[in-house]
Image (tube, rainbow, N blue to C red; front, side, top):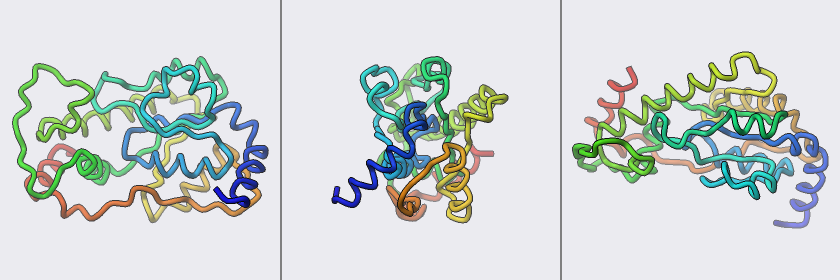
Length: 223
């Protein structure tokens, strides 16, 4: 980090000290802009952590101001305990970062190692576990999609009357990015001494890397 960046980080951190004390939790799913948001809040002087192991680590919860990544892949398995976080940090900001479901599942499958020539296999375990999300099965795809829909709806219902500390946002939609970025800044009341643009992290190639049969199944599962 250069001298100017270090100076901006310190000044922006001071300008946002009240927001930092409250803490910001991104509780949306994996592959919904978690890296981008983490890099963004660092520019505003937040001590940000982007990892899968912060939720029950008291040292990390106390040390950092901004939290992203981690969470769940399937219903009822490793889901964020939002109620616990809310009780521990009553003034915290909660961000449900979301994404178009088809674009999201394609991004997630690519991250799991799916390619155009990937052969699907039957899922023959008696029950799902957190680590199964990389398994090359249409059954897994169906459950990943089902979980996204169920989990996001559950959080929206939970925060139904708490609009002052809960924001649903999609920073991956290029046509709406500017508007969504402004909503985010207003929600947390972010301040900076320098001009800050939304960073673009983890760019991926086109959807052609998945075969037509898998893409057709995705469309079926989403409907």
